[in-house]
Image (cartoon, rainbow, N blue to C red; front, side, top):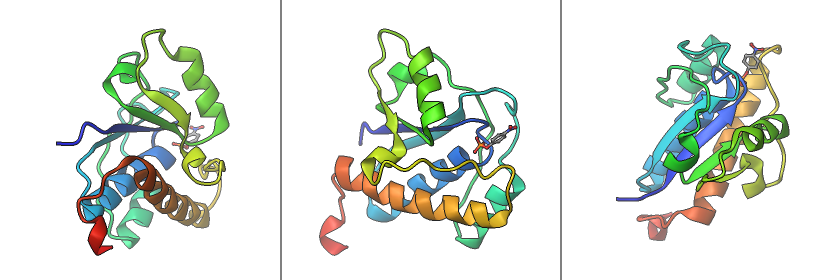
Length: 157
Ligand code: 4NP
């Protein structure tokens, strides 16, 4: 049993991070990596809501199962998770601001595992922005697992 526990974080927890959670879980499963994945927002505006319809339809197009109820970051996340990965710099700053002294999780920009690029907020744009978020989540999931996971099936990839 892996002790990797990863929390993907954006602002509202209805667009980027629930997609990131779904994609990372799917990529890990396909690579044979056992890990726990969750997501949350730095804000609480959408707490209790299901993911945005554009996130759900983009995941459906790529056959990625997605099911999540939005929630805000909480203090215990910083000790419950091994890695807390922020979608962009603004959310990273907000995480650093609420991080407790006894935090054990590594808190960083998800993009720091690949190209240091943020996942841009697609909320006020069209569906194409959600496809871009999907492609980024896929690249970032593989980059993250390349660095932190011992793939059981890596000899077959
Ligand atoms: P997310 O997108 O942070 O990727 O979930 C947003 C969702 C809602 C809002 C902004 C961004 N909002 O302002 O309500």
